[in-house]
Image 1 (tube, rainbow, N blue to C red):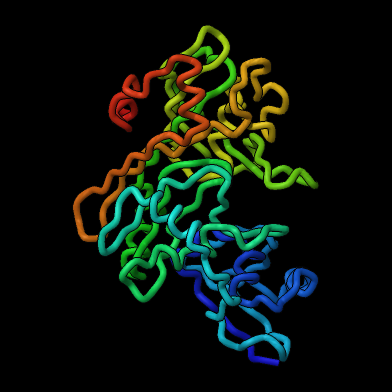
Image 2: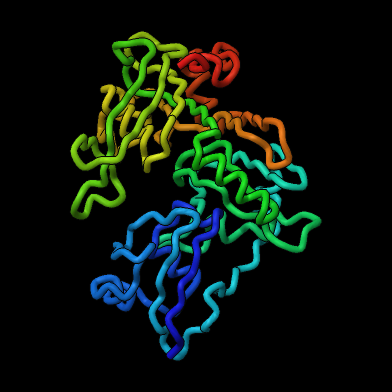
Length: 332
């Protein structure tokens, strides 16, 4: 057995679930043992009891009880990484939108998870970052996350210092994120602000959020209709001012217009039958603007994935109609 350890969460690990953090650092600690430690209060976050799905924040401390003899004592240990095959490595390099000494920005393809989770294979971006080292000896670090089925701008830090500064920009809300979504139906109000607190649904609903003004976390989204196709569908520009899990998906459903392809939140109403339109999620992180670690502002725009480009063409939407990202909400 090892001694008790107290480990500090790094910026690139911010928003990681506690159970996933344990799987990454202590792979031989099984789910049953971790649940026992959590039940008995042996694992604590900032000195307080926590649940397996607790989202960690940079700077928090995790108390790790004495580990089984077969577990390596070093808290920074990771399980061996699976080598990235040449085809996948080239796919990731082709997805790079911007790169300098401090930052890499990817256009994440839909269907690629950013981090692993229960029941998932090692096919997630965090396990593939060796492919994006380029001339460096160390791999880049995740700064934030996107849902598996959401495409678009994803930021990586190339050094610990750069990653810390980028993560601080997200935490202080200096980072602005612009999303495009195709929704089923057309919101009654063309432009507005959604202010609806969100909380995770209890039970076995999986990671699903619902409006809960009493116990939910503050969540704000600005939206506007860029274009619409009669009453069948609308193209929305969205800017979340908070970063809650599934915030845009839950807020669009609250408007009465679920995101096209989002069966989790919109059920059957999230699909348009008889059109041949892709059933994939139509949510894209279009642009990101934030302070660059060395000064000035960094703004990157990501082109649409193929399935969304096809749907835009079907409805006759012209991407030039949106204008510059963030301009519509600059005075809000």
